[in-house]
Length: 221
Ligand code: HEC
Ligand code: HEC
Image (cartoon, rainbow, N blue to C red; front, top):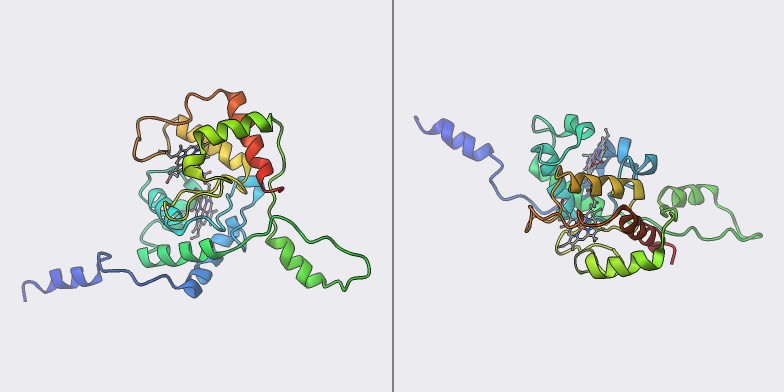
């Protein structure tokens, strides 16, 4: 009987294989997140809360673990992650659900004489996110982006689902700028394969602004 407590411990530990993601449970968990990130994970307050919809599930999972383990700063979210409040299985479920949410970059134009369904329009508007164009040299930004960022973040800055790399197009500029500051200050690690070498540290403010300007117009096309 001496070994019973150990057996119980092993039985209840997280080291057991997780189930495949359950999108319905993920949707329920999302209700907690929606208070800040929005009903469709579209983000809010001009990027104080980032967009999560469409991010790679593996990326979302990793960030939740980094926040929980205090390896990436995020004070507002700690009260939702501390004390095992979001177990591994729920991390997997909610991340898969968020990856599956599709936002729209353009609202269909209202045509006079067409049937107008106010409810349908309202639902579309909630899923609408288009990043406002910011000042900067878009051409120069595009050139820099292609040379320095594209290999990882993708042709259209759409990220990489398989590698768990986040999109940069369609994400709030204010949020992206804040992350770049965190990377440069080494409060967040950009490339875990080369944690000591910050990719963005050598860019001037103008160069970064040009890249952000380019990123801000990709979703207009
Ligand atoms: C109290 C507000 C709040 C709630 C509730 C909240 N978040 Fe967040 N979340 C934030 C803030 C603020 C940030 C941005 C942190 C930063 O600026 O670095 C963030 C960032 C994130 C990121 C990083 C996104 C990226 O692009 O790197 C993920 C992933 C995330 N939240 C997932 C969740 C999930 C899943 C839930 C629900 C279980 C949730 N959040 C609930 C405030 C909140
Ligand atoms: C070697 C691959 C690589 C290159 C090159 C790269 N990135 Fe990244 N980037 C990543 C990875 C991986 C992440 C996610 C880090 C994590 O998991 O926390 C990331 C995250 C980011 C984020 C945070 C996004 C978010 O949702 O929180 C920003 C902003 C960013 N990169 C900007 C850039 C810019 C601008 C360039 C080009 C100047 C660039 N990156 C080049 C791999 C790269």
